[in-house]
Length: 303
Image (cartoon, rainbow, N blue to C red; front, side):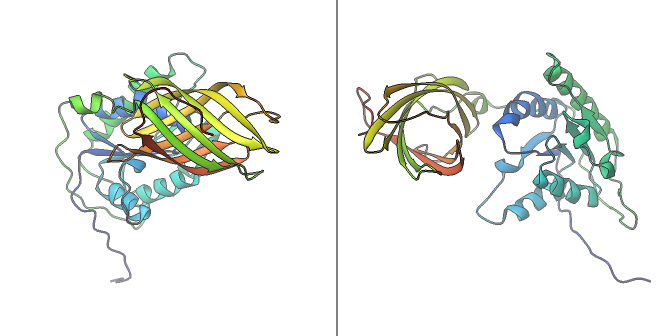
């Protein structure tokens, strides 16, 4: 008998679907409007990687979610290396995997034998079609009473939970967006020129999950101040906020030769007074932190 082996404890399996996908605003709507509703429509809890990260090792958080989930959904578009790594973990554990892609060339040869769903974003109904197709694929997974190893010499023994009979119903708290209304302030250093930028973000009252905000950015060029007023489209999902610049005007141009629209991917703190994350600038990405201001009254650009 060969005693060379590795024993993996899966833990208690849950009626949960672990979603692995790039953390990019490009896929945010796909997750909130297509993937999550499809998962919840078959009664599974929907869990995404950035929703479970703790102060411990991210790898350990991913590993635990992969071990204990009932099924994995993976968005392969763009061949994100983190996604491929997480698919490999699930594959070795014998977990059912539903692959999604908007480009069939992004499905590696080794994975083409797995179930995958192709969708075409040029189709105006792609969201509805993908949601329905994903729900059907997940329902087929739930019909299987056991896990099955994908690879030779790996056997899986697991007690699966009883398949859910009702869709997941979100609580009122989940449906009502958190209020970001008010004034937020931040600073960052430009990447190429090393210029300090001060920014004032104004979010209107009653912003909802999708809203328009204004951003006033101030910086110096050759000793003269430039003030830019930028309009951003915001999308709030839970505590994750995506802000994408759509247009801008100069309040004061100074010696500025041009301005590139900004893109922010930030998370609201539990204390509701910080937005921390990344800002994508013309020449790269910076860490950024907005602090909620207590100031009231008229808004004035930073000096």
